[in-house]
Image (cartoon, rainbow, N blue to C red; front, side):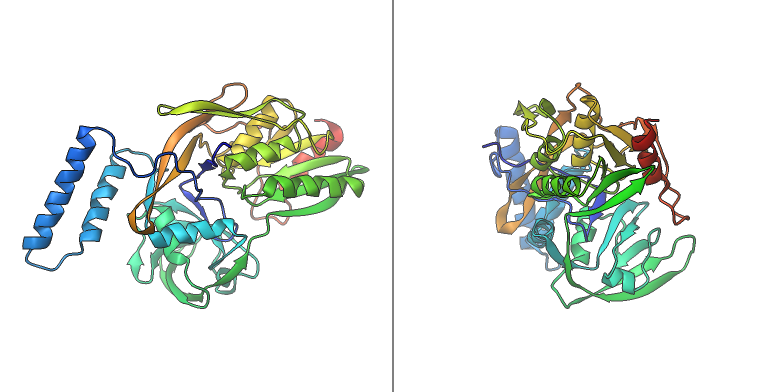
Amino acid sequence: MRPFLVILAALLVVLAMGAAFVAGYTLRGATNNGHATSAATSLDAQVIAEIEAHYYKKVDPASLAAAGVAGTIKSLHDPYTVYLTARQSQALADSLSGSYSGIGAAFDKRAGALLVTQVFAGSPAKAAGVAPGDRIVSIDGTPVAGESAVTAAARIKGPNGTKVTLGVRAAGKSGVRTVTLTRRRIATPETATKLLHRGGKTIGYIYLQSFSQGVGTTVRNDVRRLQARGAQAFVLDLRYDLGGYIDEARDVSSDFLAGGVVVSTHGLHEPTFVYRASGHPATSLPLAVLVNHWSASASEITTGALQDHHRATVVGTRTFGKGVAQANFPMAGGANLHLTIAGYLTPNGRDINHKGITPDVRALDNPKTRRDEALDRALQYLVSGR
């Protein structure tokens, strides 16, 4: 069996919807190859040993080692390769369990702060008045500047019932207010569905939160249920879906494709691997896929596959543009190295990394209105064909 690859949108961290940041994909563990690596490791160990033995103040050898790792990773200039402590690894692994303990918000790292991109109904963040557009500048008194989004998100998560204090700068304002929130378990439903009626046609709508484990089956069941209730076409909404397992991107694509390539992965040290649709779609009805700038990684795999096979009309704005995959390498003490090991191509051979996917029909939602203009445009296309 092909081990799970996880597709990670490193600048986009979901705390409520649970994007799949951690997978048990261990090709070779934490092994060293070559004399240069061994020499560098020996040198690092020697320097740390001398500091520990002779520095004029007490030091933490683990912190010194982590700093060395951070410098090594930084030299790759790869925002998707990160070192996760044991706590961070566990916090992100919880994202796959269907629930986690946190505040219920999604973030993007911007200019030394965490930009709040979503706040979820019924969450501690919502109750505290945290809103999209706000910026988190500190967590428990420690600035987030210089931290990766993954690290900052792991600090916001924590045991159920514990408190976290955030420094929040409201959108368009200069002042920072202090907000203390109590973490709690937050359920992460995989999909949200409804039937919509437009121009005499009944359209099944499926919003996909993330490509977590098992979501391909969930979407398949949603499609069948909506079709049984009279759906004559479908909208698959992947806006703000940050990605997840590549296997689930294949399975969701298979829910709509009669067959063919979904995506191929390739890397210097990895053999090319081709993921193909199962050939047993849940429906052949017309389909529109909604995307925006925050549709990333596994969302882009599914979007690219459905677009390349002319199975769906893509509606919205250009997607995020993450065309690389990561694997998890366990480190000592429960830590993990999340390392980019492969790039991927759409069925037509498109490399969308840093480019994104251009929609067939451009539609931009205005956040200041109650209407969902992009969804309206997708419905219009399904009804009229233009």
